[in-house]
Each structure stands twice: as structure tokens, then as C-alpha cells.
Length: 408
Image (cartoon, rainbow, N blue to C red; front, side, top):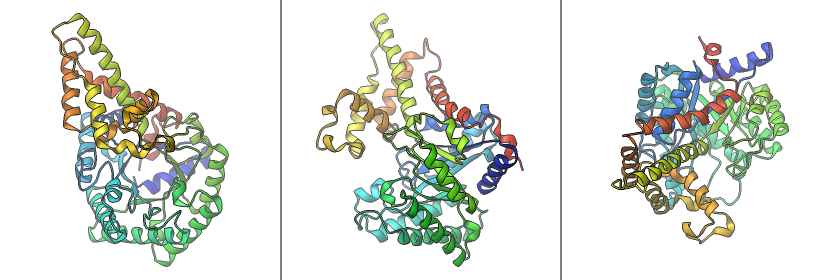
């Protein structure tokens, strides 16, 4: 089913029957998270979005090691393993825009270079079969402060027009679009700016004869970010009312660890992205396995511990990706100079960047091998731990057996 049709169905169910649903978008930041998400979708009979950023999945492999085509292949592989209809698993592009891939900033790409790179990635995700594209040109490293709303609109229209032209050139079926940002730097957090953005965007779509590409989702700030977990019910309700006349729904990002997930569907949120929380779940499952390995070593003097978390810490440190999450008072400090609580937060948050590091992969396999004689399926244990985290949202968003609502 087309995602815009799903949105129409969600709106109709709410208005006609009082049935409230909010779609879950899992950020596929590791092989284990991808497998767990497909397993959770299958056993709960729910459609699921997979929101992949260009940091995670891109033409260069991203930090997962997957190109868009390889990501979709892995998604289909797990659909076959768990007997899930692949049509209910919807790959999506998250934050498609200039400088939203870390390497574009690290390599100091000019606007023209990052713009062309984003366009090439849009072509790649279309070819791979992505079903939703988040168009997010809200960052410009050459302009201080938030961009003018008019410029954000113009660039959003340019990227949507490019995507539609490429889709037609490649003779591909329609895709859905998502616009907006939850980030303050995007300049759309203010309600007046948000309303102005939508008016200009929809007028521009009509002027360019792109009304068929009107967004299914509009991303908005609903109170949460990477450091806050309080959902602002009143703000979400107001934003939904602003978006409703356009036939779109609000989508929240940074839904990780949100305190009141059930409130999302209650107020009419259409979707929610979750990513770092599932990396943390993978991390915690591996902590539990490492604790078992430590107990095993006390009873088996010949066992050589894998030292998994030593390798993980070294890999996170080497990556330098953790530095972008430093608080102002932490600037200039080494990872091991942070407080124990902040070190663990950094490791839990940044582990996703290095799960594919060769040292980490090897140490993880040694951990599994050490445990496997008496703990037969360590990998399955990790996957099931993540499934439990994912199912918290499936239940809260009323997605159990929700496939029945979206049958053609």
C-alpha cells in the first residue's frame, strides 16, 4: 500500500470509528536492530517504516555498511526468514538534505557539492525501492543561524521536483514525501514559521504542478529531543490541527524513551521515529551477555574473556563520532575524562557507529563463542531483547494486528 493511502486510512479510521493509530518508524542502525524490527513486525502483524539516514545507509555504505540496495535486500531477507509480507515493511529516507550526512561537514563540502551528493543519494534510494523520502534542506553551513523559511521551501520544492523527475525517468511507482524538521536550527519550530512554511510549500507544489507529491508527513517539534523525553501533548494537538487541512499527519522524531508513548496516537500523531533507544537495547543485551561471560570465567579457568566492551570503547573513541554529542562544559575532554554516567551514555548512543568495526565484530563473535556451549543462541538473545524494546511502541501506538486496516 502507498504510504499516502495509509495516512488517508489512519485519518478515516480516527474520524469514522475513533480508532487511533500511529505508525512506528524504526531507524535501522544495525543488523540486529533490523532483524529485531522485522521479527517484531511479523509477530505483531503490523506495518512498519524503516527510516534510514544517509549516515546509516548511503552509496558509500554508511556506518552500517549498506548501500540503499543492500539495505533493502537485507530487509527482504529477514522478511523471508520471519515469514513477513515484504509489502508491509516500508524502507524510507530520513533527513535527506545538504550537510545532514556527517561526512559532508567533515569533508567541508561546498553547497554545490553536498547538493549534488544528496541528489545522487535520492536517485539511489529510488532505485532501491524506498517508499518515503524525507526532504530536509534546513541546514546550510555557509549561512549562520536558521535559514529563511522561503529558502527552506524553495530547496524543498527543488529536491521534490528532482525526485519526481528521477522517479519518472526510472519508470518507478509513486513514492510518498515527508517534510520539515524537529531541529531548532531548521527555523520551523516557531508556530508562525511552521504555518508559513506549509502555506508556501503547498502553493509552490501547485505552481510547479507537483500537488501529487504533497507530503504524507510533516515533521514537527513535539517536545522531545535526544536529551528530553517529555511529549508535549498540547503542542502536538495544535500542530495536528494546522496540518490537518492539508491531508497530512504530524510525525515526531526523537521519540526514544518518550515517557508517554500512548499519547502519540491519542492526539493524532501519524508517525514516530525511534533509533538510539534500540542501539541502547542492543548495548544492554550485550552487557547482560558479558556479565554471564564473567560468571562463566570464574567457573572455567581456561576461558579467555572476549573483552568485548574494551574493544567497543576503543572503537567508539577512535571514531570521534561521540564528540558531536559533547555538552558545552565537556568540550575538549577525552572520552575517558567524562563522568562514568556520561561515558556510558556516549557508548550507548555511539555504539551504532561502530557495530561493524572489525575489532568489535571479532570481539562480539568471541563473546558469543565463549557462551554458546551452555547458552546456545546469544545472537537470538540480543535480537529478542531489542524486540521487547520495539514492542513497547507497537503496543502503545495500537499497532498490534494493524495490518488488517491497510489491506488493499
